[in-house]
Length: 329
Image (cartoon, rainbow, N blue to C red):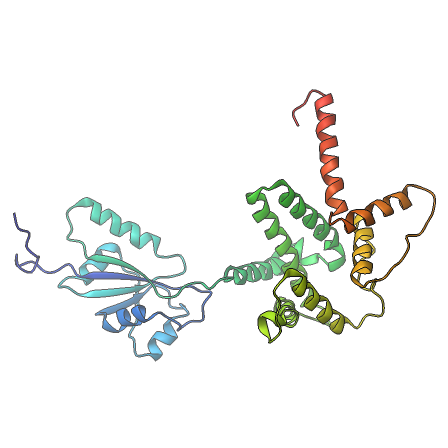
């Protein structure tokens, strides 16, 4: 049996509905070419949100937009006769409308228009960071706890989150790694938001990001400049040279945080000394501290992170303790 079109049967063509979605993380007006084509050729363009950020740009481009929120049946009726109606979706994506259309289609009693979902703009990589900044801004303004926090009060959380990140890396837990990276990122955004309120030297998360971007470009002349680097050693040499030019430090120990764990501190000092080509004998003294210092320097020279090595040994010790207690590791 040959199928015939609605027009051949003397019926009105059901038309077409285009649900146009946009990203609020992309500047309004930057729409795809298929989106502009759909908008310009539509018989009607509708939008339920009178404050939709795209509306001024659509109207500036000569697109007439009716601010209305039709029901599913009203939208189907608007498409009768083969008409095309574009719905500029709100931020929520018009769930009530699409659910209503699904119910009509499922009833089998309505000649449904063709339904097309057309993304008009896409998020760029890193776009969700904008959401994080916005959420943090609101939390800082409205949360009784967050609004009272200071850099000093949050410092301990930065340390804790860094350790939890290291633990997730060493455990090889990908889901935990993703979550802990988010917690570390939160610390950066939180401190940046607090910094905006400083009366003497304010800065924002954009200043933080801009600073690290400039630093990365300057320290990678083999990527962004004319220099060449064929090995990781070449890259490290570029990094150390440009860093020294930036910091203009008088000692290789400048910039080494003395508050870090002892083994890590010893290894960092040993690394700086070895990289600088200095021959500095280890200080001699009695006690476990000097023995640990020698072990940390020896580990660093062998390419081993003494902190990670000790943590691995400590975990094995923990498992042995639990085994002695008759508990699973």
